[in-house]
Image 1 (cartoon, rainbow, N blue to C red):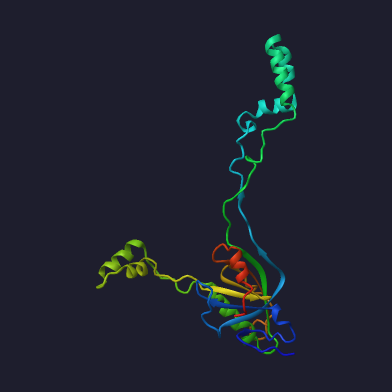
Image 2: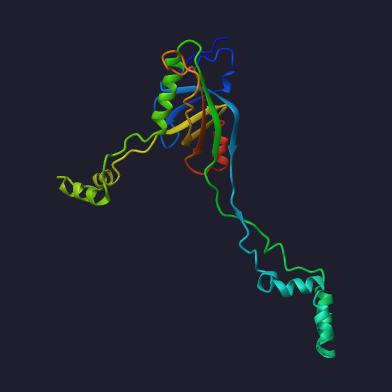
Length: 253
């Protein structure tokens, strides 16, 4: 079976389409921007989707163990009895009774051990992308590599500029508006936002936190790569909720 080829990447003949990852550029809402510029590749090794959730115990330390740890430990363990024996008869008996009552008890309760959800970072996807040339290294490996790097690098970096020079440039303009000041103060353009379609789910919008290009990968006599395995760390643009997760299994884009 030969799969219909759309976009850039290797000709993955005979492979289940759901196992082929499709990467393309999207806007901040996750809508595709350029249907023709898609990179098709395989995820090899481990493809791990990692979600971290911050649960904290704000009431931890509200018990007597935190206020007077030594005294609380002596009361709970009964180690205060030798001290009670050295005291006078009245104070000693009272201390001994308190010690017997406190033995084996603790100040930990369900309230002061309750955790509260304090937030979560964006979800990360760590994987290794594989590009392999079967016929044409330039079209199947080099072009997808260049497209990936164009996406992950800033679209444009201004050669110079500070807030002071931006204010001067904005002031010298004939028509002064807020948009012009923003463009002058932030003259560079950030990298593109991406979407990943893989195994029936669409993860979008995503950013690329890191990418590696192994330069010692196999190449042809012209120096063109014939196979690449790129370790990449993707991250969602924001933290997601259950509705976002359900939306990932929408129709293929």
